[in-house]
Amino acid sequence: MHDLTQPDLALLAFAREIQEKAYAPYSGFRVGAAVYANGEIFQCVNVENAAYGSTLCAERGAVMAAVAAGCRDIDAVAVVGDSESPTTPCGACRQVLAEFNPAMRVIMGGRTDEVIVMSLEALLPDAFVRGYLDQDDQK
Image (tube, rainbow, N blue to C red; front, side, top):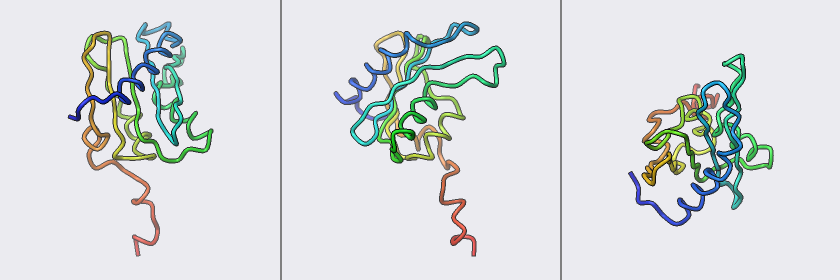
C-alpha cells in the first residue's frame, strides 16, 4: 500500500462528486470514478442495464472518456462505491486500466473515511499487456 497524498484525496473527491449521478436501478450500488491523465480529470459512473452484460463500470467509462480526449497514458484512477469498505475495481476494469499504465496509482474509497491506495500492478499482477502482442518479440 502507498501513502495517501493530497492529489489522491482530490481525485477521490472527483469520484465522490460524480457518484451521485450513477444509474443503478437494479443493484442500487452506485460507483463513481475519476481518471487523471495528461493533467486532466475524466469522470464517469456505472450505468446498469436490464441486460446485465451491457452494464458499464464507472472506471471503464472514465478511461473511455480519457481516450476519446486523446490520452493514452493514465497516471491514476480513483473509485468510490456504496460499500462500507473501499470499493476495488472489478477484474475487467483492472485489465482495461492495465492497457493504459500497469503501474498506475489506484485510490479506492467507500462510504467511510477509509481509503486504500495501491499500484495497479499490486491489484493485477502479471497483467496481459500490449507487449504480449508485439510480433517482433515472437520471432
